Image (cartoon, rainbow, N blue to C red):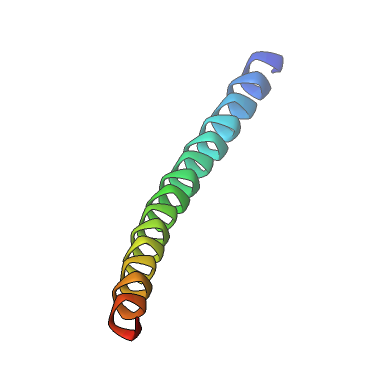
Amino acid sequence: MEAQQVKHDLELLKKGHEGTLTQLEAIEKENHILQVTLRQRDEEIVRQQEIVE
């Protein structure tokens, strides 16, 4: 009985871990996209400032 419970608990932990890794990957991808967007906006601001000067 106890071995089955431990096995069950281990499976739940494994699934939770996999879900957390998936969330982490999604957050990292979103973070990368936001960094690229921010860099592009910064570059556009610099270009516009050069035009105004």
